[in-house]
Image 1: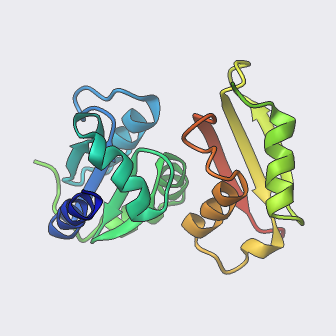
Image 2: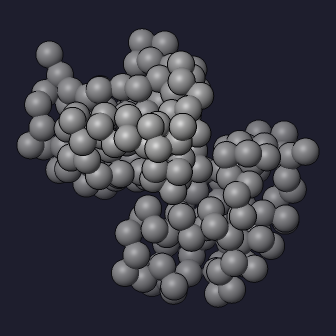
Length: 108
Length: 77
């Protein structure tokens, strides 16, 4: 039921300050774009929740409708969609991403 | 069926008529491209909105037949 998936996604996005929907896990990313997104977040030293969309086909498709964004990974900060791998890289290089996650908890 | 670079550029120009489009074939497999799209219509739009405009022009191919398109958008200086 797509409403259920959208509600589940919404809960994850709203209840975690920094969330990365990705393919695989931070330890074992399953796609180049996802691993680059993880590397960026780890470099910034911000704590983040990760969701492996490969484990849940409902979420894998539902997340694209949720943000009207066709690809994975997808980064959410403070409940807002920030972007995919390209935008994360652009923002990282310009310093915007560091600024955006500044107020959030650091990774242990 | 992978896409040809020209088809990608044509689709983007169809959807964003004033766009200047530069396509780079990253892997030569018709599946991994980089695209730089510059358009005055992007002015005032967030990066997410700019990219969404390009994905809309690609009519749902992004993430499907077109697996990897490294996208950079810009407003003409």
